[in-house]
Image 1 (cartoon, rainbow, N blue to C red):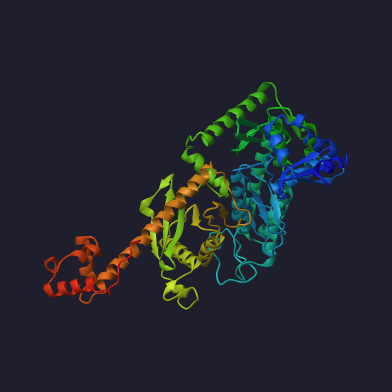
Image 2 (image 1 turned 180 degrees about the vertical axis):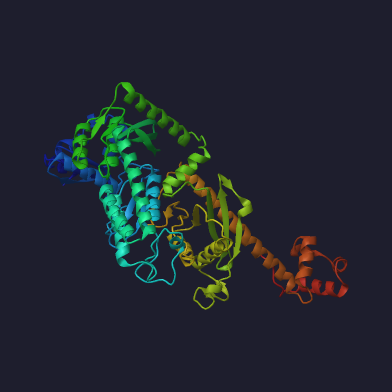
Length: 618
């Protein structure tokens, strides 16, 4: 059946259609109230009013469709298929910022809490998203401080000989070591955290009051004081939330600035009547920018799968699917969600302000106006999900040729610039692998083992010197190198240290703990530019050190293998004449002017001996 015949036989029911090219790759996903009527319109040349539709129609070689019961189901299915297949002709949401959740590992015997930006079906319970992103980290810090439930990566299925630092600074109950906490006490703390994250602050406060009075009656006054302080903290938080909730409805305001094919979008989040955060989106290749289609696609991808929906969404224009999208979002949220285009008053003035911010974002991203250091640091924090803006980044790379002269380098970025005084070089010894397959012929031939050694030596030294750890550790390489570095930190009992790697060629970022959700940044992203700058400097430093060692070894070997010429003499001659090649061109009398006659003769003969090793250029 040819394509036009297939289109003519489509049902007149609601559904989703998928256009494919000759290689069976999905080009476009759309929804329709009537599949036959909507799909037929693509093959009428009179409807090719824009280049995008004409280009799409010319590439269509086949189509699939899925029938659903109503247009609401079609809307949800269309959104899921777009996110799954990322078709060439759909408008795809590219986000430099995602918002975090708090993950509560309910499936574990000793539940823990983590900040995460990826939801997986692993038995955990997720709370959020939180805006601004720092709120999630502040809440987890409060949980560590008051409930003593950790965020560590320690294996709690087995007992350990001693607890980590978090136990000693009273941020963890210590379930990793037998005897430090009873199962009942930890379960009580975990229940409190669950009530706290569920927002059941009143129930939690009542439970804490009961325990406070019980502890006081039993003359456990220190424990009672701890409960009293926690109740005060919860009461203060409750009051602040009531004030914020009374001051205004939750509103998202979205606007853009476009000079096709480049588009910048700003989305401001207002919570409790004040702006709490903003998101930036960028497109580089929207040749045909159609505002109505653009805003519709953007809102669907932003809100149809969102865990939390605001009551109001302000946009600059009206669009065809507004009423349908409002209805679907209202059903999902459990409260009325309105999509508005304010025409006057304060709301319209604020929408214009967001449009001005979008124009400024466009200029910063696409007109090579260098963002401020503070803006770049904030973008790095957001893109990588760091607990705080990175003040110091330490980056590692390994360099060798077929396993010989293996070295590692560490460079430092601090406060907006490279800090060369803190660069470090590591000669990889492989002492821990002396009797393992990784060590062959006295040479460590395993990049992962080399990375483990360099990272372990660096941070063992910092521990011994009681110096702070960096905001971020950056590894040049993929997931394997990242995990090797993480194993080194685990051996040193360093937990919750932010770490990421950047894979060569693909320029993909992997964040420790989120390896299944790699970060692919746009080529214009200032975050990518900074990471590339640090990575390239690390690579340059490693290569330079490796060449120095290899060159020095080879040049010195050509002289020191000659009987009667030691390292001291070889160094003196190389400093004086610069190269072995120049020494080889010198006469016996010229050499004798620098050395005793007998030693000069041995050197002269040795340099002309065919069996003498030839120096090799790098």
